[in-house]
Length: 322
Image (tube, rainbow, N blue to C red; front, side, top):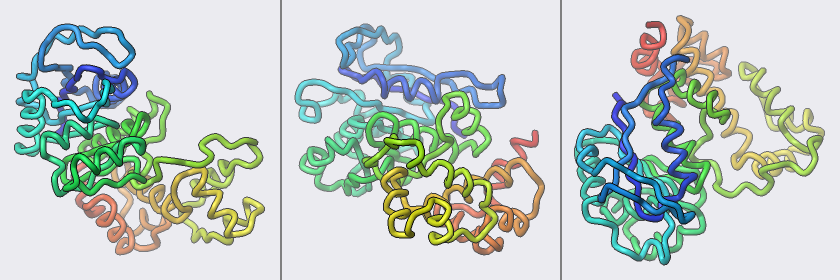
């Protein structure tokens, strides 16, 4: 069970990425049915820690609190020539110890360099901000660096790209440990999507459409309302008044993924909610979410979530009901 979370603040810590971890894990949301984590900020040398923007934060806890953490989070830090300086060995050992005992380890943006220096990314898949991937590859050739994703999970080690991708990675861990309902409470309070797929592209050509009439939001909203139907590219393109090829290209440019992948992820999310919050049978849920049969739904759950619908309901359904 994910309960104890420790954020490690390094010299040059980036305030936004630092704030992402604090926002997801540091706020008691039990009043609205969400989680309440035991959240601590720690550093190797308690006292003032200079941020990347030039002001100090006073951190009172040392790294001894990391010994019992269920999750160690390392946000971005930006200092001159970053990635080339040696990280405090006490920080590296805290990261190694966490990974060795089976705790989650999360990095945001350039925090991946700390995980790499600790050696826990050797032989693993990982990512970081697209501006830093070449440096990470040069310094740590044993890491399989993916430059074109929002976040990567390899075992219980999660690395994320820059800024907002840290939100996606943190919510992914919450969803994995506590289920969709808990994640939705946090996301709703933060006014962010409950989860973007980790495999989406870091770089989206048109994150804000130039003209609202060009946006695909009306089509995606319609897709969400008709998940139980067999939706084809041709059908969706007609609704968008585009050719199938233009629709597919524009959809990827705006969302960072293909229509089929986006649709599949939304069906899984809806199925997770139904498994947690209803007593509907698996066949009925499969029909309601567009998978058609329980066998097909089970295939997608195993592929994406590494668990079955039955096991997912067993893990999270009773918790919501209680």
